[in-house]
Amino acid sequence: MSIINYTYYDTPDGHDLVKKLFYTNKKVSIIGFGLATSEIILVSKPKGYLETLIRYNKLMTPMFAATSAFCISTYCATHIREKDDVFNYAIGGFTAGALMGPFTKYYLVSVWLGIGCGLFGMVYKDCKMRNIELMPTFPAVRHQKHGDFRTPYRNWTLYEDRPKGWVAAEERAQ
Image 1: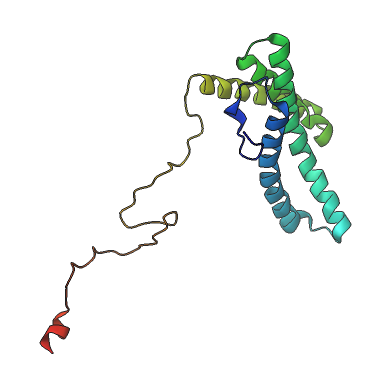
Image 2: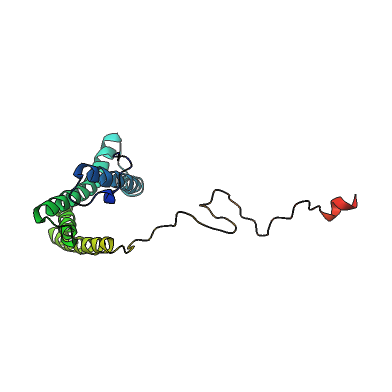
């Protein structure tokens, strides 16, 4: 499988670290670029290209560091413990959350963030192991009667189509 079409759960934990890092950092780059751009435009408003690049770096580096730390620590925990269970995600979540301390300079907050991310990682892995959908997604096929913004038909009519061969009364009179 190519690295472009790879998703995180194509292989079990403890395998393909480079592909998992590429996948997670690809997702974070999309989300982080959008969040950083909106913060730069709306809040910080740096002057010049260099200050803008520095601001992008300051905002996106913690995101890349946290996702990379989660992937690497989960990978290492899986290899050291030789088990694929919820505690590997707890270790990864705690590492990712605790890594925010040096970036934010609030070390007590980073400890609590690490504990929270570790607990969320345990819950997420448990749901994955039991095939429970924790974060629901939109269905692939949508059946709308009149259409909506996600359908390719763009049919917003209020009434049904007229039958074949229908002629208006004004046209029949002529």
